[in-house]
Length: 112
Image: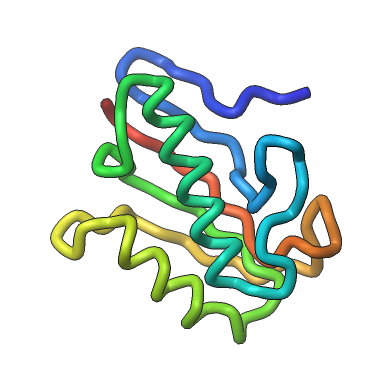
């Protein structure tokens, strides 16, 4: 068990989001763009439950299992964040994630 997010005052700390659907199945096996869409849809749902939205995100930490997935990740990220309001970002390449079919994980901080 884990908390998908913790709110402290008007700051929301969002746990790492991956491309699991509601039944904990991987969405988009082998497809970084499909996985990234699911990640941001999951994050959007967590933020909405906390009373906010993606425009409230001020920072993201991105974990990719392969640097060659960076362009696909960024193409999708651009659809979820306004160009004039991109969050601060860190990108880390990792050996693996919690499930072998996962290509990315994103954690975030939002101020609502």
